[in-house]
Every structure is written in structure tokens, then in C-alpha cells.
Length: 264
Image (cartoon, rainbow, N blue to C red; front, side):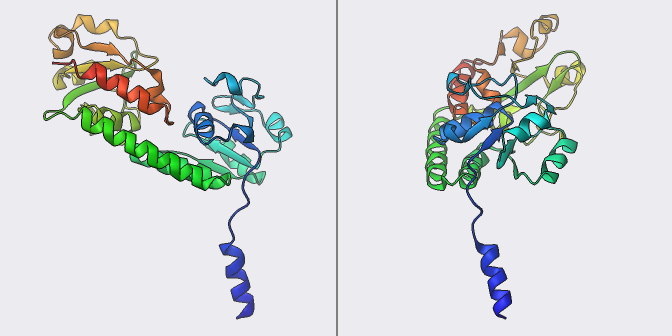
């Protein structure tokens, strides 16, 4: 019985706080800044859109391809990963090295606050994480109430043009659209980024067409029968921060909502 109690006590002990963190997504680097924890970052991915305060950090590879030798030289005790930033095989290799890996995948804005808390707990700054989550949720509710619509706008969100890709259901950007009084035109599709046809968009006739950071929107002029084209409501997303889930996403959502409130 004493041995059992000892084991239970050991299992209940909190994990040691990480002191050397590698971030493998721009949004995760931003969350570390939001948590006042930039001092713990020791590496990032090449090509990250990162603030000047993180420009000095060494890189450990590029999106989808880690350089293990360089990464191991930095002796991280926590690696933050966003879905798609590291292939599954390389994630498995990291775990074989014994390096703790935290995959952060919020699919709803309410879950983003939970991501702040989870990361904060892993770096020993749980109180700051809870504070940040509470602030984010309160500010989000203010924006949600301000831009509420009785009749939601139908929005086609284009992330690529040839072939045509959009966002499916249970996506963070889809949730951002809901905050702005809109609905994702293809929310019924289960894939994160489904390929769709022009015919499918024509059949659903969106009120607004939005283009993300890699979208090309000029081709829609060929389809004047679409409500969005007829009303000149084919717009580029005003702030690309909408695609990086961190606290700054609130500002990006508010800019989007300001644009969307002019839609007819």
C-alpha cells in the first residue's frame, strides 16, 4: 500500500516548467510573446512572420521540414507545434528523442483561450495564461455583440484559386466569420481545406467572397450572376493575422467585421 501511495504521489507531481522552447509556427511564437515569455524561446522555423524582438532567434528548418541536428544543438525541453507545421513522421522522431511536444490545435475561438492556458502551464506561467485567456474571451464577446446580424451573410472564403480551395467546418476562420455575423458557405464539409468547384459556388451564391493571403480574386469577374460579384463584395481579407491564431487575431477579426458590416 505504501508503494502504491508513493507511485500516486509521484504521478500527481506537476511536470517541470520548460525553460528552452522552440516554436514551430508564427502564431505560437506570438502566443509566447503574449505570455510575456519571449525569454524562453530558443528557436523558430525559417520564414516565420515574426516580430523584430524575435529576429535574433536561430532557425531549425522550414515549414514541413525540420533540421534535427540544428534543433538538438539548441537543447529544447519543449517544442510547440501547430497542425501541418511538422509532418507526422518527424513528430514521431521528436518524441523518440524524448523531447516533450505540445500540439496546439484550437478549432473554435473559445478554445484559443484554452491554448493560452495550456502553453502557459507547460512553461510555468499558468497565472499569466489564465489572465490572457480571460481577457481574450471578454474582448471577443464585446466584438461578437457589436457585429451581430439577424440574418447571417453567406461567405465563400477562398484560400487558393487553381484549383479552388476553401475552408470546411470546424475551422477557426469559420468561427471568426460567425463573430462578424456571417456563415461559412461550405461549413457542411468535414475537411479542413476542401477543394470545391466553381459550379458549387455558383449554386450556393454567396453574399460575399473573401480571399485569404494566397488567394487570387480577379477571376470572379467572369461570373456577374453571383450576388457577391454583382454587389462588388469580392474582398481581400484586410488583416492576414486572421490566419494566425494568437491574441492579435482579435484585431484582425474586428477589421474583418468592419468590412463585412458594409455588405448588402
